[in-house]
Amino acid sequence: MKEDTLTSAIKLLKQLIAIPSFSKEEEHTAVLLFKFLKSQDINVHRKGNNVWATNKFFDLQKPTLLLNSHHDTVKPNAGYTRNPFNASEEEGKIFGLGSNDAGASLVSLLFTFLHFYKEKNLSFNIILALTAEEEISGKGGIEFLWNDLPTIDCAIVGEPTSMQVAIVEKGLLVLDCTAKGRAGHAAREEGVNAIYQALPDVQWFQHFQFQKISETLGKVKMSVTSIHAGQAHNQVPPECNFVVDIRVTDSYTLEEVLSIIKNNVNCEVVPRSIRIRPSCIALSHPLVQAASTLGYQFYGSPTTSDQALIPVPSIKLGPGDSARSHSADEFVYVDEVKKGIEGYIQLIETVWHQNLFSK
Image (cartoon, rainbow, N blue to C red; front, top):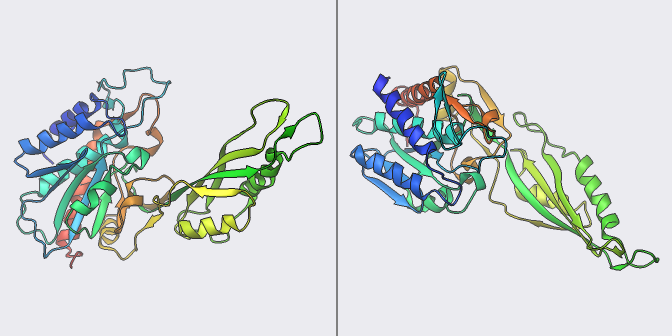
């Protein structure tokens, strides 16, 4: 890789960090990315705050690989000791909000796309999609853009994975649960206490174990994460509301998990969404075969990403460390960005030159 490629990638990363781009507020980073690709003589498109482009010699007769990462961030937490929008560089580290999650992956994929953009003899197409609202799994992100894209066959999703390949990813099911009681005065034997009604169900969520265990992701994980009931100290509460966070493995569909829960609890159960599905890719898939040839380590990811909303086989791979995501004084190493660009290019070249990808 040319040294000026890395220099340009780090410069763009710093520009992205300097622009606040909270989920649903990515207007200005979308403009930056659109203009940057335009400056490279790319025929670039935009829908909402999503920016995308195809390789120069795009051919509908060929299969298509999507390169996807996101340019939205969470809000900085209270533990920051640095200006989260000051992209400072110290001792080989780039500090700033979104540097690790997922700015490093985004610029690495972007410069990988530029590397292949004018290649006439590719056996497949490449589409670059730099998307919004990933941090909230919003409907204005990759899902909003999907039907505007040409047919996609598979995808590389850029997230900080320490350049290990996630071949499966847990899905997310969030439940709003309501236990019903009947109001009454706390000083008398009146009413039915909804908190007491909720307790057996809360304990069921705590102790229940799903039978099927994923080889890569382990067990389905359920956690009661918030609870609320009551308005006054002397009133028996008629209703108790609690929220359950469920990380679903590839062993179950979200519908199967929901059915099991409803058959075992007495409270009312309402899923907020069944969009964030577990994802997996076959070990025989060209992307996995290429990664295996190159000696990549495979793992199952407990965190969710846009993989959940991409309805084709995908891997999650990128520079940076997932443990730094959403942390105070977030940073990424310059060398990680370098290895990210080199790693993506090498992976795609392996798929291409070994002729692993055909329609």
